[in-house]
Length: 94
Figure 1 (cartoon, rainbow, N blue to C red):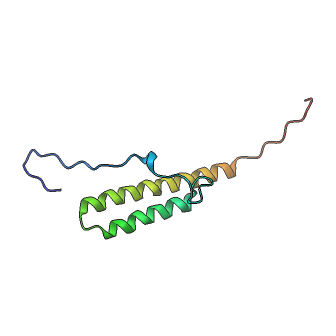
Figure 2: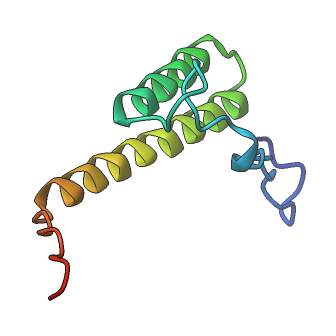
Figure 3: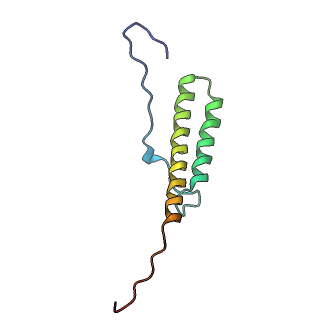
């Protein structure tokens, strides 16, 4: 990002719509788990290392951060579900 003048604004980055990224496993069955999200983040970090332009690296690192956040959310959700006590089945006629 080079400034062309004292009043120039920094370049804006295009972030693709996150809804367009697949949220299912390669087999198409079930939602991704935290490890899947981490693998996706690692993929973007690997791509970022291969980029020669700093702007490209920045976008790919931001995408990796997005997937790491999803991994953290998945871990929190998993812990929350595991901590919830099981409900006893309701008895008929009660």
